[in-house]
Length: 209
Image 1: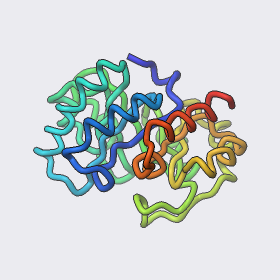
Image 2: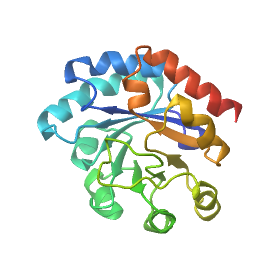
Image 3: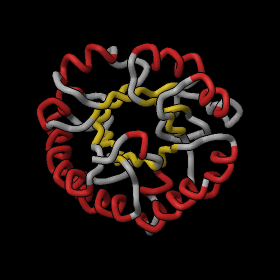
Image 4: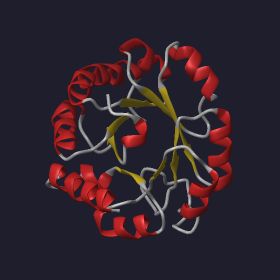
């Protein structure tokens, strides 16, 4: 299984972009493109079908040696032995999530400021998402924070930091130049007509940096 510190390109298999019936195919394309870990996110999907999708995906990510992270639902991680859970600011505390999973697993947390990032580190997160850097339909209630605080958050937080929010191939160089070492890309991969090629291009930029 790929270690978190070796992960730089984080893909989110968001069910608002991908039909449930197409998840396995898209996951294979993301893996072919070189993503380092995959999160399953289904904000509007009921728990039972979401758990079925996770159960179908997990053998695929296991074969590739990639962690599969579930958004919001520690009970799914517990029942399917997923590698991690990702939390938002309004979700359960990290220690409660670890209790629910009841075994070693990654717990990541979304943060929208340097102060929240520092707080997530103190709370015991394994990694953080930092953003949204740019406007994005997946976070309509959050104002973009821009690139100015990327260097600062890397100075103050010693966890793996995945910059997120509106990142696409055409702005990825700017994100990297601002100090990002790891990124999350959602629609920039999922809406590409060539998903694997888009992931390969993003991974090459990150590797070169």
